[in-house]
Length: 349
Image 1 (spheres, rainbow, N blue to C red):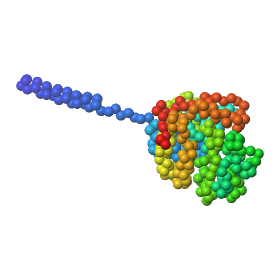
Image 2 (image 1 turned 90 degrees about the vertical axis):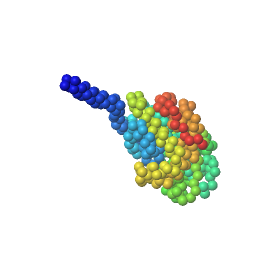
Image 3 (image 1 turned 90 degrees about the horizontal axis):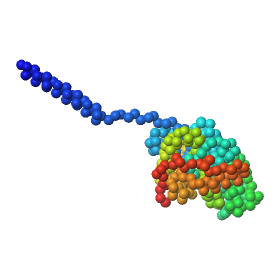
């Protein structure tokens, strides 16, 4: 009887041990659920309308989501307004012309810095009708160019004109409201039109006839960067990881659009339905075909790269155009510290 009781106790003990042992093993092998942190909310302020594809591709293809970022895109009202929004913490990142960043630093002491390029080359052009017979920039002498009162194309005109051998006193300017300048050119009330290359295809489509252009970058202005991605120094200093992650996703979006130009219209249309998808593709391909987004420098060092030598040239061009008195050093307006350690290279040509 005693032996039987002992056997039962042993069996019971072994059963309990086996159960506990099983539970213990399962507990060790069970993966610990790691709750991922909620994505950082980031506001990205454009300098104009949301009609270019890079940032939409970064959202659509999940490149910012990979960086645990939830990015909200806000349209802009010009580079100056965007700089103000970043400086006053109404947005975290912005896109603006590097010339306006230099001006903001020199004239108002606004502490902002470029952290990556958008336009690796300055995109300003002078459009004209092919039927005009103009073949070289000097043919603009005796002609009228339409633009707006705040056009940077007019501000940097002296640099372009001098490099292209144009007698500036023989060129006339017609200042127009932004909403009217295209119609003025198309109706023939001006011989040429100063604007960004991005809008060339749109104007040509409206004109209903072949157009051509002279690009500032091809006549002595090749050292000038164009639009950049920037942030204020507080963000750069206090949250460097956020800057790195934002730039990483942005650059992947840039590469995707360069590799897949035919898709950009469809991507933009998903997020900005009012945009003409076919025209977006044309505009993007025009920029790519004229080396606005990709240069030899970005082929060598990766997308978003800025060199000190070219930034020195850019500052010099801007300083002369605006007659700046204050000496601005490159280190006060840009940094490449947040570009990926492994560069995001554009596709090989």
